[in-house]
Image (cartoon, rainbow, N blue to C red):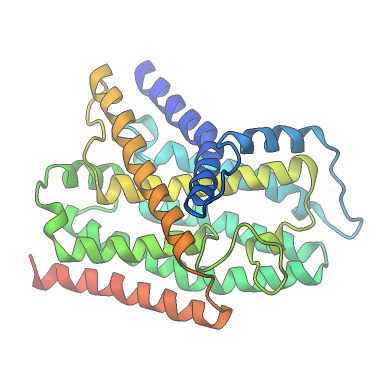
Length: 314
């Protein structure tokens, strides 16, 4: 039991401390692909430390929601790290690892962040909140259906059991439904984490921003928590993509060798996905806002086809 608890703490630390490194690494790789030197991949750690040392300036028009939201975002992401099979499928919190519970945690953070954007009374905040809710309304069903496609193959909605049973399938990548679900989930991951072509995390132009518009009024420690939570959400989606669709390497036992192999496999898979995001964001431009529903509708169609293929391509 003590070993399981230590593994949970290790997973928590990997997500909490690895999120800024992931964000910095994507920025560095994008800069290199664009012919620039780029900042150090460890710069986000310095940014968080700087923000935590600054005083938070809060509008007198805001309520408790504005102050509460950054803490809620951080807590929901840390709780997600406890129930998602990051390194192993054998953890004390594994009984909570249901995909429906996980999506509710993500949506809870999105809901409160949208409320915080409205709470400040800013025109930009309200605009960003309305856009975020429109994206979430299209993205969340796609996530559920994409995971349902692989849950049907595994016969369960438990994340641990899905990974365990999928790891035994040597021909997993040859299944068309599996590949369709992966593409659909990848598109939704870009939308949910505010990446190109849905949103541009490097801009503050009012005509293009979604996530940045909602957090425009935050400063100091509140902004640090919001940015940290956003990095953890990106890392969590990449871990889900890596371990649910490419489950090889995930530790099925708690032996030191299995855990070491799992750490190496996770680093390689998340690194490959992060590199894919950097290449994609270098090659494509941000979509116009009215074209985003078309992209998300396409991902929903792919997820639905993945479910349908389960009944016709067994």
